[in-house]
Image 1 (tube, rainbow, N blue to C red):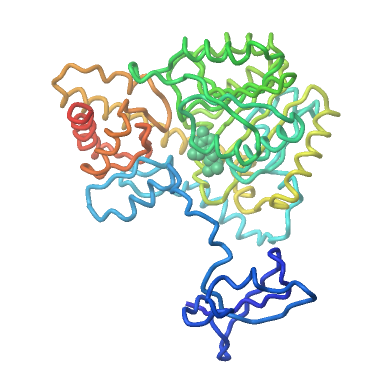
Image 2 (image 1 turned 180 degrees about the horizontal axis):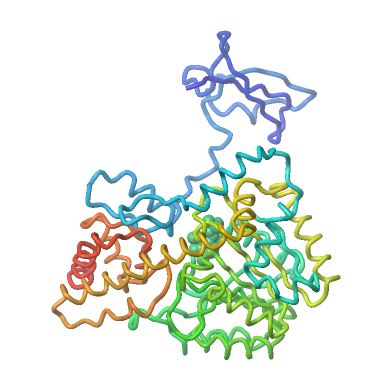
Length: 485
Ligand SMILES: Cc1ncc(COP(=O)(O)O)c(C=O)c1O
């Protein structure tokens, strides 16, 4: 491990610390037998602040003593625990990442081809503008809205390349925080765990509404509507966070992920997949709400890019202003490239230009400008008709494998469980994930006894499952369901 000393050029707690390698017999950072003062305690409070104090010394009590250990992330922490498990039967169904039938990560062929093209062209690594790669922004808005959508020609869409889905959502949240101060988000229970973190860190308050019914392992439509009505009772306008469906989707009509915001009373409501999309749309429109879609799985639910963007297009076609965060982590397998976008469809080109200017203003101090590599991949794949159709075929293949696994899991559960329990809810859900209906304790049993790693809300990623492992998983689910309270 490299040793270092801290050179302190100011005595104040906000002193700037610079680290230097130390190979000259200077005291080492973390040294146990060296201290600043006789008591051997934290030296900093004792430093006189008269004038500029300059010293080189080792510390054995950290300035960061007050920082507590953070708990592991509920989703990514599952992967860490999985890696630490040495049992061969282990299965990671926590994170939503596509795996092959051999449970290996998958790099799409079109991605490899696009990267080869990029290499041949010898493209440089200059900074992108704050709003990102122009070719990517064009392609991503067209993929989302349809290339011939009039709002594009009318220049009513402000698109800014973001740091994948998460970073794009965060940018949208920052826009809400700045221009709808005090807005409150109502979030479905459950939701993707990071939604709450994103709004928390953006200082946009949120609360939850009923969404999931553990009895049916399906949508609690009545509960959801009644909670939303209650929250929206005083609302004049809402921001909707609607989007791809998929991660929590139930196969009812058009599912939507929606967040509502009452701009006038500054209430924000976040809604997850809704079954009665059109009915909801009408309510939202009557209440003058702004939808905010989270499109993290376009193409993964149905296998069709157009089909999975239909809820967004429906709202736009009704003349609504919408916010849409996009991600290419799942549908192009670009998880680590962090490529996505924040789109705002406005009612005029002028409003779109103003919104875009503010998105850029928000992005500049956060991360300055986005990464180029993934954006170029997307632009190359979408911009080349051959690669584009190859991508669609690969996406259909991935979505098809997940559908097969879902069917196989259901068949195995039905064949192995003699109790007569109805497992058909598995087939009613769509997309990458499935709720098993298992409680937290039952989910713990899945991990502790069966080495199946999953989130504690009973959700499993079918993309991390193979046909060959379905029987094993079914046994684990049946045991946990019947034998653990
Ligand atoms: C619902 C939902 N939204 C957004 C994301 C964002 O993912 P990323 O930041 O990798 O694009 C995810 C990832 O799992 C998700 O499940």
